Length: 384
Image (tube, rainbow, N blue to C red):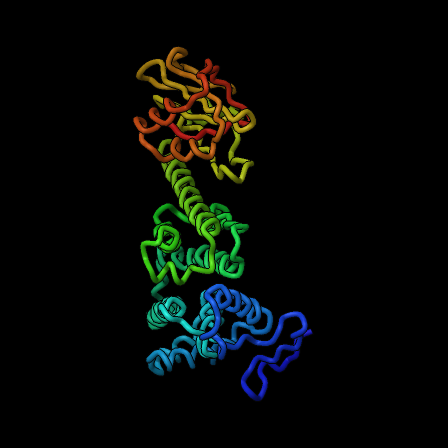
């Protein structure tokens, strides 16, 4: 049980469970410590404050830091209204260690705190401007979605980053960003700040790994090469997930424009897989109505990991009869097994027809005859 009293009279955090957590980290002996020892103590500090302090405890800590950094009273007042999200608490933990005397030779930690504080201040300024609007001026759809993306997606990414900070190994995980975006039904137009966040973090890790930025090399020196590579790989994977989600949203938008009564009847008996059951793919079928009149269709049988490409026989395009796609050219159409679907499917969903052809031609597996049948294991990826 933690004591209700958070701080001792001497200003230190009251470590009620010190036999398990140790006392609050101090930095008087930092000058005699190696980089690895400093990094180890920094990581222990993050865990220590996570155990003993709550979000509101960081208000006074951040106020002291801001005053020392030259922020004015209005900045401090604005920060006190900011949401107690992961960005706030992470800034508070590191600020506590800076306030306690932790060395920061290259300014990486101070830069991290200031970036988070500036983000929080910008958000609060936007909120204040919104509150000043006349009550009858309802927020736009764009504003509502931007706020949802910030609170439901970017905050999850910040939480993921906090876990990466406390775990210095390569044994880390990413969030399921597609599920987060589906949860708020985010349109493709709202994904830019998410892509920018991921790209910014990826660039930092890459520059530290490739040793192109001395400050970042120093700042991330507590991470091994494999740990840095793992973080870069996961961020690359998140960007690929964004592309898959964007492709699915664009396909859905087109489906609403093309829907007709006669096409509804044609696809009435068609059975297909609506959403991938494999989290590694994160794919969603387009509306099957788009098959009617298409010149090319790309399907994926998830059970057998087979990509099916159907080319139309004539200018009237493909059509559907019962549970099969008809009017395809048997000589030009084919099926091909995918050894690593996760490396190929993103290209099928996002690339041009010429680029897709090059990707398929680079595969070493043999092409087989396509039969046009569609079942409950088949995703309808794309039409052209």
